[in-house]
Length: 172
Image (cartoon, rainbow, N blue to C red; front, side, top):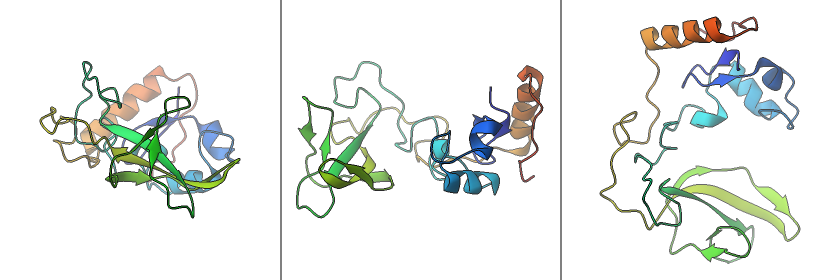
């Protein structure tokens, strides 16, 4: 059970994983600094995206036959410095992304045996536009801040369920 709540979305995080972040814990060291400043957490992309729909503005579709399996987003990758198309999926089922992706969130560049690569969370191009809107963000895909009473209720329930001391890093 986490004992520090994200100031933006209310996601619980374990204090040890945050305060001992060296890139191998719950967050990187720079993410931990931003989290402790009250800027948000990786779950809400530091206050930018709805945590219920991952910023797509659409509810998960359990019957979708789409490549994203109803999540309405895909993670795409391409090698840096090469004029290659974006790709998604895993070997042996790697697919070429059709056209230019609509980026929801861009991840930091990574390294692989072929070299540096770019990675991004993008809207799935195959999902129906008439998918149900997310009730948490009203279809906008943007994080709706936790209001005072809701945040207090979430904090109280966390304190009651936790067997650890709650650490006051909430920047209230």
